[in-house]
Amino acid sequence: MNNPEPVSPSRLLLTLVTFLTVWPAGALAQDIPATENLVSEEDGSRFARLRYLEGQVTVEGLVGLRAGEQLELNVPVMAGDRIFTGEGRAEIQFPDGSFLRLDQHTEIELVVIADLANRWENRTVLRLASGSAIVLVESITSEDDVFRVDTPTASVFLLTRGIFRIDASSDGERTTMSSYNGV
Image 1: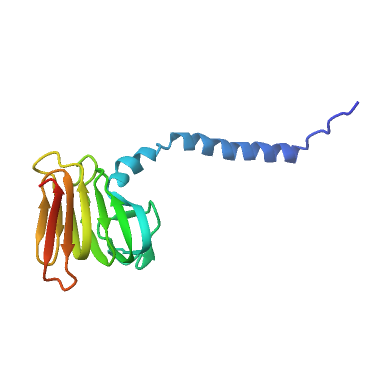
Image 2 (image 1 turned 45 degrees about the vertical axis):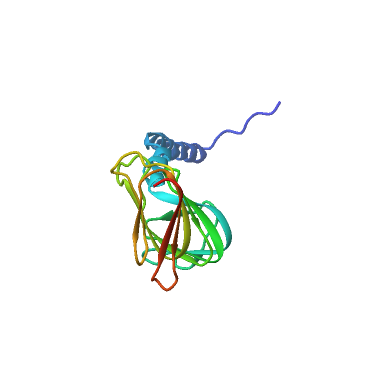
């Protein structure tokens, strides 16, 4: 019959020290509040996401942290980001469910993004420097909600749910707005 080897005092001490070191860390980890809701309720409601990508599309951050970065699907884009479509197209979804579709050779800046519950911001403001954008506005629930697209020659206020196309000429002298549905 095999007799187990006696445990040396140093091994017993090492096991005890390891247990006492690891156990409190595990207990403390259980006391740390979960952060899943913080992302979806706070940060997640203040940025938009790239939902469609075709060809060359890049983003330049406000402070240049992501200058020239090639975008990928589902990447977050935030207020202050400038998006450029060369030979490409993109679709961006906002927290309220609205969409922005960018045609080729379009330059646009996301100036302000309304959060989902209008806790911090109730307006979305875009600056279309040149190119074509189609905006599908989903959530205008009160007179205080604002969805605005600024161009070099005009500010377009989208007052109701609907589908709108806004074109800004590359020379900065002409803006055209079409409403497919909505005011």
